[in-house]
Image (cartoon, rainbow, N blue to C red; front, side, top):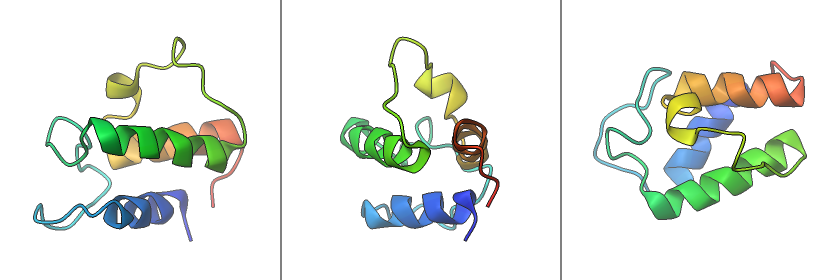
Length: 83
């Protein structure tokens, strides 16, 4: 399973519905797909996936995690995985 597929599965597990198919270019926040509560869960998922805690002062979540593909690349870069 790719990081993108894992991320999309995670988003579905958050109970997100009604916005159609989630693809690589799906906007995570500006579309309203994820709210602030889902963001906390997403940060925990990313930390678990990359194996280290995130320093919120070094990550601009809205800029670096704008779409599914952007967040997938973020995770792949920091985990050294391109699964």
